[in-house]
Image (cartoon, rainbow over all chains, first blue to last red; front, side, top):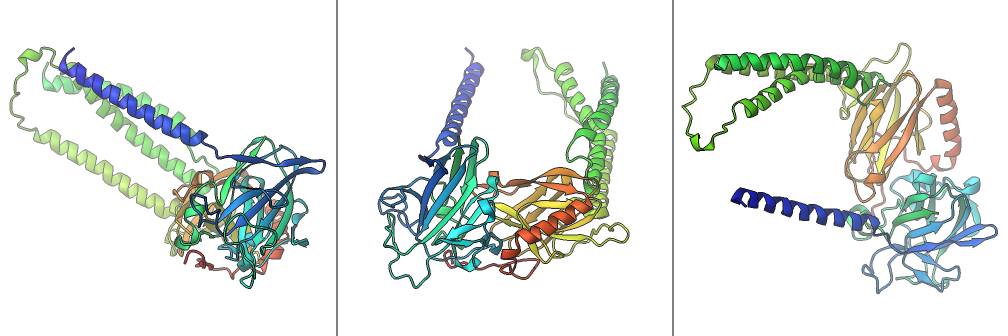
Length: 221
Length: 280
């Protein structure tokens, strides 16, 4: 084998290894879906119960980050998951226990709920179509469904706010309930629109830019 | 074979290839390239693309022909005989002809591009004080629409319809649209390809772009500035509809978003919105 051929073989081998490593990295990144939580099925549709907290659990890799959690209706069980499995073409009832304080919306327009069944949601049992944008703590929005619901924040006068997940019913919280109908199967994304990432420039870093805290996926199956 | 004979041979090969290739490009390829002919600005972009491709095709053919011809004909097959060649003394005539030709082509393209862009803005963002304002159809004022970018969605505000904001975009046909593109957070870029419009969306900056719509059609909207983790999902579709359909749609949007209308800030070309309590 001549030196030119040897060099050529070396270059080709190195290039092939680099390409394979890049392909592996991309493949693992694309298929590395975080743990998901399935909505519970009932006669009137599916039920998904979530909670939003000012800071994740103390044993989380980012215990100071704001986050969504999947919870049981009695708040006894908390799971740090932002990928939710929902059945296709089904009415989904969502309950969100909101433990975080008010930050306010950057775009006031998102203070109105859209895409919910009946055009309104329940805020602590009261039928509501929009909130004062300055009182929003978070938003639960699935763009592909045209769904967007603002989550009212607990006031600064709250006596017993929850510092880190998990929280309990005795902590100050707001309860937001709404329903929507899922489309056909597919992988969709959801996100929060409030710049709620404390300690990051304009509130848009950290948990807002990391899947698994203030955003995630909706797997319609 | 002398150098002059090689030159003639390459010239004839180039002409033989360039004529049909240019015809194919101009008549078949260019008319089917994006963005299509759905708006006046997109149509002008198609014309520009056709002219530029028509000019660059023969140039590319000549260069490639020379390149391939040289590799094949002038290749030294006997490596043992490779010696330092004679000094290249230049050929002033060829050099002058080459410089003059390329300079003419480049200057022509620069002037052509500038004139074309100044004609109607070519659908590009022109900043807050546009100089290439297309004339609206007789008896019509441009319809002003604000494009508001945010992580990770575009929303639209219509100052002439009580400042209503919408999630999606519909445009009336046969109307001059004046887009005011801005952002509430980071740098985005609003690209409605088939409309022939692309304008950067910068926070605190009013970027004006024009488009003259024609008949109804559907178009894609994408963010084309890497803007965060969900940048790849920042897309939507818009529609150009008849004037009556647009009137019905915007009336419906005003009704739908009436609850939040009172909470929207007064219409402005830019926003520095609160809150920044969390981020500081």
